[in-house]
Figure 1 (tube, rainbow, N blue to C red):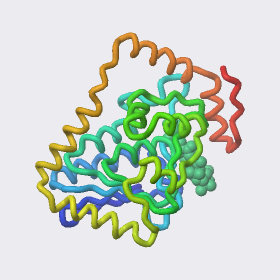
Figure 2 (tube, rainbow, N blue to C red):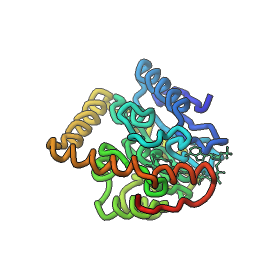
Figure 3 (tube, rainbow, N blue to C red):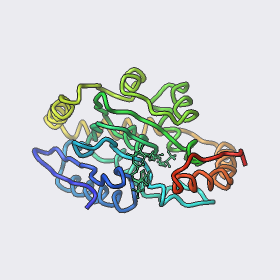
Figure 4 (tube, rainbow, N blue to C red):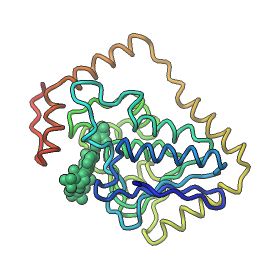
Length: 257
Ligand code: YXS
């Protein structure tokens, strides 16, 4: 088991707990999260909290790099991480990310796909395709564009640097930045408050906001241009170098080809 799941007073809690791989979102860990979310839906959870174990320094290291395919689109619609992001966005109740520790890559997309985010002073958020030579996907870019100012999105993607907690609050990644000692209390108070509201209204408003926010008309030409741009990246030697460098635990040398 790579996660722990519990449901108390209509509040579901998912705890990422695979410290040996820094809670990397592997297919196996994601399948457990998806199964737990399905169980929460069946048992009519009114709020879900996603968190890491209390002593984790890394909330999640993002996509499991050892599972990233080479020389083809690394983030297909059917990719486990993409399936998880859609499950969180369509879950019929609010999902709160409770963040203690650093968040990397696709895990930052997961946190931004949650409905509310509460972090403490140890929280940081990085999106790292530029570290790997990886072609990020359109749904993911749109998720960032909807949640953050464009200049902030560009700085995060162009630098792949972690956004520290105070900037995460300033830029709107966090709903609330609280001291680590208060993180669990504040998050659960928020969850309890939501769980006490009319669940049909909360579920309908969440889904209405999702379908309205995702109503992006993309013309066929835009679609094909994006595919062309991404194919050049994921078929590049730089992408292969990025993956190789991670496995060899060294800094990649990107040559722009
Ligand atoms: O060497 P062992 O077997 O002990 O395993 C090491 C790492 O290989 C493993 N690990 C990971 N395995 C698969 N996928 C990962 N993302 C991943 N991250 C870590 O966990 C063991 C401990 O790692 P170590 O020694 O580096 O831990 P640390 O405490 O010194 O450093 C923690 C991190 C998170 C700062 C460091 O592990 C790190 O930088 N990890 C990679 C973070 C990252 O770049 N994630 C992006 C993944 S790609 C993704 O999410 C998107 C597709 S995108 O690229 O677009 O953002």
